[in-house]
Image 1 (cartoon, one colour):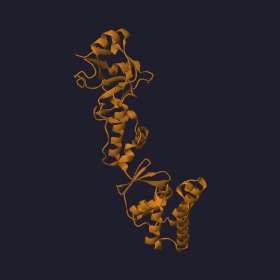
Image 2 (image 1 turned 180 degrees about the horizontal axis):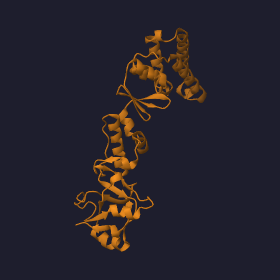
Image 3 (image 1 turned 90 degrees about the vertical axis):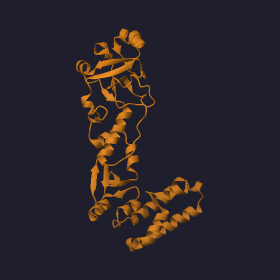
Image 4 (image 1 turned 135 degrees about the horizontal axis):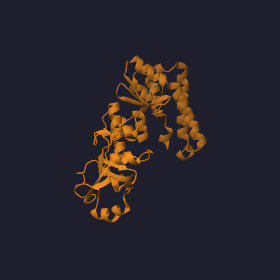
Amino acid sequence: MEDYFNSVKGITLDKVISYLQNHKNRIAPDKQLQVQQLCDQIIQILNNYKPVKLATFNLKNHILAKKMKIYRLCQTEDYENIEEAIEWGGYSIDTETIENIVHRDNLSYDKYGDLVAIDNKYWFTLDGTYEPINDICSYIANMDSDECLTLLDVSINQVYNPYMETSMENYPDKVYHFTNYDIWEDEIKPSGYLSPSSGTGLNNRDAYGVFTTIDPQEYVDGTYGDLCLEIDLERFMADMNDDGKIDVSMEPEVLDYLLKETVCSKLGVECMLDYPSDISGSTLVINSKIPLEYVRPFV
């Protein structure tokens, strides 16, 4: 409980007191007494009340209000370097402070959407103020696909797939679907269609469509059946996709990985990203049933 009250905007009470002792000459004389008095008041509150009492709404906000006042009184643009600005600035640093340091110390400044890199190693999100990022790789790992696409300023179909050696704007003419011979004879041929289904792996069960691969040799071991079907994807899309509702896509987890890998490349950082073990970058999912005139057994 006490730890919660001891921080606001990343500034602990100990840090305030330490800053006062080490940088007293950098805080205006008329503010030094105010800051010290506020520190003394907070210490007195913490010493006089038990944690259960400190949890009350009014008292909690009373303490936080005092700490915010300390924060404002102690803020200074005269930081010795960017590290000190991050340490003392907490979760939010005003734009003027950062820009003054960048200009004064001749630091590099690179902006990628709402992300900013200073001196090629200090990362921030910029939304009115600069909010430091402690670990850029963790930040990227937690980005969703929409955030990645926005930063990269591309559409999903423009994402490069190294397994295909192209983007989804140029999907292959032919793709392949594996099934069992009995299913082909007893179910698929009588229905007249190759029908969509849900993914069967641990990581792709939310995906739905006809699962295909660009490599007819990928599953010859029989993992998904003993019969390989060739789909004339180019002709199928030309004939059947007049309304633009048929979609050919990578598996969501592959797309997520490739987007984050591309973000890392654009930002110039090296991160170890987790790649799901039971999905393939060669897989393409078609979100439509496919008439058998576009399908034939592959020999």
